[in-house]
Image 1 (spheres, one colour):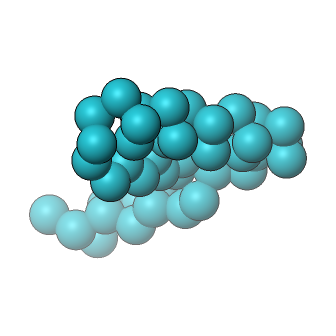
Image 2: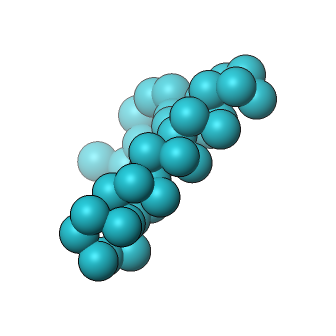
Length: 44
């Protein structure tokens, strides 16, 4: 089952918070961390 996903519509403030959290996790784990904000779309 394939799904379409859209990038979540977030304020600049929320994007900055996500970026800071990614940085914090990266520093704590020594791993590359990527958080993705999305909205579910339709099922194909």
